[in-house]
Image (cartoon, helix red, strand yellow):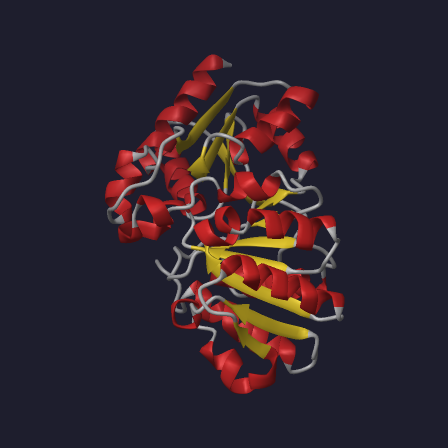
Length: 312
């Protein structure tokens, strides 16, 4: 089942709602307001909406400047442009300068679909995870995004939000609660743990159900905040199940697998397997094709989980 609202609609609605009581909130766009659907914010608060044109580095610089004046800027673009294209401005003007800027990168990984390899951010979280003190978050669905937005606004610091623009597969309900800095356990288990994020969470749940039919009891943990990662949840998973599979819509290099492995190796080494893009560039295609191409399917998660269990 998919969400009723697109993630970008929930993102904008949350900003409009929060801005009604917090005049510090502003939106900065690089001429993508139609793609990211921030038009309602512009209509509601025209004096707090800034379109800098197709100039992403300038967008980040303007956002940093607004932050120095006490504003809370949300600036957004496609994930490739929000990270690769303006990395120096992100690093120096925002992070190094300790500015409270929220950077939104849309169409993560294979979600870029027919925009192709040039617009397919398979390395964006790796880039931002390497920036000191950068908070890196990937909301799973609309229910989670709605609950996380007030926490992201309240957090005082540089933030990268990896946002699926369109409708996500529904994993949570509106009544569910989330802690920005705590992983969310979806299912408990004893044979292995699948640690997933973004579009891979729904696939991890489906893989768990298939494994259950095969006689395996597998846990699923949603690590939606990649940095700072919930080390306690990862250590607990390693201790309780003795095997970990990391599923991410991202390059295996410096992504979620790397972040989890850093914790596992230092605290509780166990067999680990990865379902991720194997150090490749993106390409044009629809998500089902791309998932097959880059081995990001439910069957891939099942296969890697069985392999991790066997290695125990």
